[in-house]
Image 1 (tube, rainbow, N blue to C red):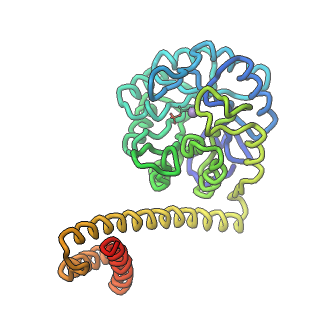
Image 2 (image 1 turned 90 degrees about the vertical axis):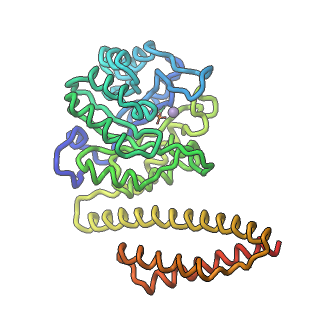
Image 3 (image 1 turned 60 degrees about the vertical axis):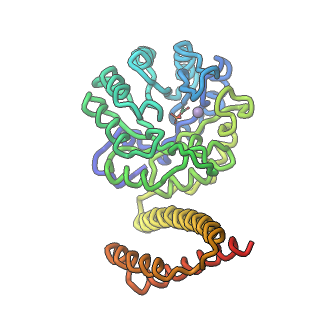
Length: 360
Ligand code: PEP
Ligand code: MN
């Protein structure tokens, strides 16, 4: 796919006419399972076949992967289907084994990116490899930690780098398994515009029903590819059962996605426009989320005022907020008139919330 990047990367060299697609099961379970899914995915848009063989599970006692044995199965996949292969590596021993078995692409999982020690160990083991290495974002929303991990690999001499955005864990219950925090991915693109960035909707959503929408948002935000967990019997997968899709479903998703190429000027305009619109959608969702949070706090204040039997409207406090927000708004290029209007509306909603609590 043509893109606006300055430097040629391994992805440009692939000369794809669609975004890069990595697919395959969360975990390699048996040789038959690995080969069956691979055969269902060959002759589709899938470029790399994934299967985790060392699985970083949050709690012990769950399926932790088949280990090095699975590397042989991936070699068979390549021999039988011609698809390139990839797996997660989490230490120097994994790297050594994966390289010995000629795995084409290695990725570093979110739980490894958080650790500078592990990243350095993996970087030293990779050295000046020609293999493609993709770094997932760390589990916590820390852009510097993500960039730092990539820098370690770069410094060690890894030539073909990229990144995977798989969302961020949070204590709050949300509709996502790992919230996307698209702003971080957008900032990542600004910091490393020449690095291919792949989206992983499977670990963001944790739910196969939401995969399509997250893929579309990612493409609208100019991501270079998608990594989608795929299994012929998702419900009975040995890990991440809720988020895997069948090969048929994946093919359908790829068919339905609006893929915007950046070749002719009209398409370029549309692509730029949908990128900006996708950014607006991200910010709008955050605005609503924040306003909801603010009103929840107001409910708490309403409860306190009810206990103490004080009036809802506290003019001093309100004037203080307005003054501070007008100044803050000015520094962000917002007119006084707009800030006033907006905060009056917010204040009114807040009063409504408090009155509801007080009169309940
Ligand atoms: C995976 O890709 O199966 C995986 C374990 O992902 P993450 O590191 O994003 O949790
Ligand atoms: Mn998984």
